[in-house]
Image 1 (tube, rainbow, N blue to C red):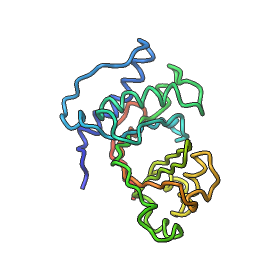
Image 2: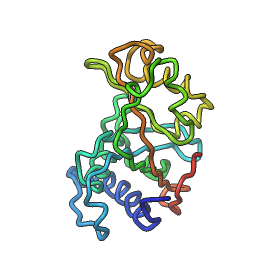
Image 3: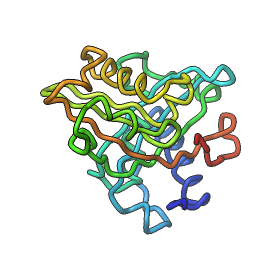
Image 4: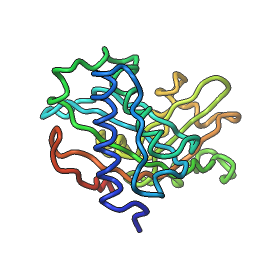
Length: 204
C-alpha cells in the first residue's frame, strides 16, 4: 500500500524543480513550510534528472538514510543533482525545459548479508522491480535505486554486482565477508514531461 498520496508526491516533484530554479536565479537554498505534515518527517530521498525526450540521466543525488525532514532532503538533493553530480556539468538555465524531475522516497535500508548462511543466497533476497541496493565496505559505498535494475534488465545477481561497481569495488564484492549489503524500497513520482503532469511511477 502506498504511504504517500499523489498530492504529496506531486508537491515534492514541484518542490524539487522549484528548488533548482530558485538556486539558479538567487544562488540560495529555497525556504518553504510544506502543507503536508508527513513531509516534515525524516526519510531518505533521491532526486533524478533525465533529459527530455531522450530519457538519459542528467543527474542523480540523494540521501540513503532518513537524516533530514523529507522536504529538506528533496530540496538539497535537487540542488545537488542539478549542480553537484560529478558525472555531469552543472545544469544550465536553458536546460530547465529539457529535463524531467523524478523524486524517489526511500524506506530505511535493511541489512541482508547477515540474514543468509551463504552469501550465494543473497540474490534470492533481492526482488528486481521492488528493491534498491546499497553495498558498503570500509570507505567504499554504492547505491542503486530500484528502477535502475529494471531499466537495464538486470537479474538480482547482476544488480548486486553493478552496485559493487557503483561503489568503486570489484563486481563480486558482495560475495566477500566484510561487505555489508542493504536493500530498500522506494516510492517514485515523476514528471511526464518538463513542468508537465506528475505521475506515480510503477516499476514492479
